[in-house]
Image (cartoon, rainbow, N blue to C red; front, side):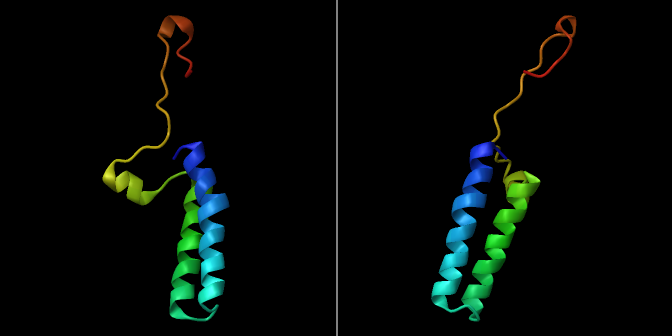
Length: 76
């Protein structure tokens, strides 16, 4: 996952889901689902990988280019 995607999940989506859970009633079934979704957003953000992205072949991370072996083969 790209940096922007990770930050959006961690700092925007997860807090919104938690707030929505509190608004609908902290012990309701919908709130529990929202809390679980928030936890998934935090977990995938911290891990830097989303299983659904892998399943559907989505990449939000910029592609790395490599130099030739003459230049040391270092990623740029």
